[in-house]
Amino acid sequence: MSHDRVLRLLEDVARGALDPQHALDRLAWLPTAPVANNDNGNDGDGGSTDSGEIPYARLDLHRALRNGFPEVVFSAGKTVQQTVEICGRLKQHAGGFLATRADTATLDALEAAYPGVEVNRLARTAHMPSHTHAEDALTGTVLLLSAGTSDLPVAEEAAVTAAAMGATVERAYDVGVAGIHRLLEQGPVLQRASVIIVVAGMEGALPSVVGGLVAVPVIAVPTSVGYGAAFGGIAALLGMLNSCASGLTVVNIDNGFGAACAAIRILRAARRTD
Image (cartoon, rainbow, N blue to C red):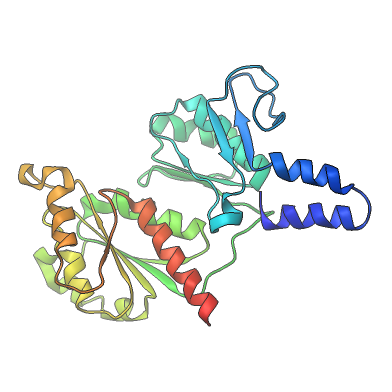
């Protein structure tokens, strides 16, 4: 459910095309759309499906109204069929969808099912832009920095998510502290960013360096990249949490999606204060 859809519903009531009770009934059930196997795509009464099967998913269609983010499909752990069906229902209700952590088979199926979907195989994402409920363009730039090339899948997940939510995105990759001059060469890019997402594995030092160079919010993303003592990203996570750069924000290991959502919240809050 989007602001536009609620507005059209209210306009239908205002011109007499829909009585208030029916509008209330639709608003009562529209927040949730159950999805089950062999379902024909109708939402039923909001808690059941026409197939009579127990839903394996219940789409949160009012999430965009509450916090500005539509529901995003986390594909890991879902079957290919489930992801394709859920994305189709989101497309039906919201005009588009974003799927993350999709494997090759799922990305292939989404490409086949939805012509025009934007697939990023490095990021493991599939984005179908909504032409009916497009995100408002945000003022400011989200800059993605990666310490190394091995961090790119997480960095690209953040980049795709931020762009899908309406942000302008810039990238500067492979600028880790092992060759600090590579970061310092990016001075103009750093200075024009509104929010910086820094993605790093190993010891996770890059966000601390960046946090000491800029005045804008810095969001640190530890990755599971590294040798044995990196403990699957725990070393980078602890290094970022203990950063001496004041005000650094840290998200979970490999959570590029969460970092992008945090960046979007920052840009939206800045817009409200303008």
